[in-house]
Image (cartoon, helix red, strand yellow):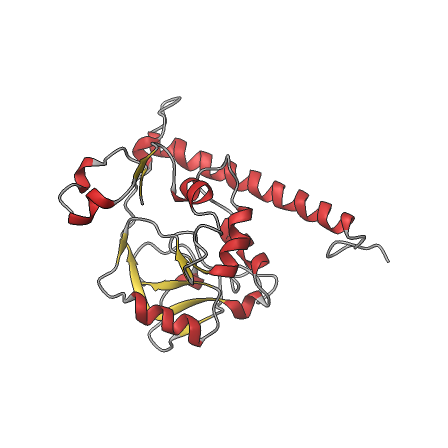
Length: 237
């Protein structure tokens, strides 16, 4: 099954396997929208690991079989390959290292990590190229929101799906990729008030991040209340 967010389905016709594939085309959607609708945990249960990757990744130095071996060796339920250091980095955690097979923590800019075991200093990978174990995907799938397109904020919440998160989430340095930073969704935005289409896409990403955070906080409070428990950092004795 091949998902197309850009409407370009015939460009794949020169590939021998394309005629046997199921093509699903829905413009202005992203991989998370498709994953929520087509990659239900029961459907993908035959697979040990699920790769939910962007399309602008350079894989010349990546071997999937070797990657899985390292993931299993280091007990990672949620992971991603290290990013080539000069290719569009946002977070230090996902920067590839050349002195280790895997790393699970890092140092970020001053003040960014109140707890060294929490994102973005640990228990963190980006939504760009995550790899999930079967069990982790069952949890993550339920966190994906039907009406939110871009998935911003999901990476900070992944830690809620594995325990201990700072041990079960990590970056595989020995198998690395290049983020080519192709703004593939920018052209699908809407130009308003003199702003470029990509600016509209970015603004929606930020709005969705806030919405996702609010929903997660509300869901957690409801959970603790239902369980008769005080939420973390509560002053109630």
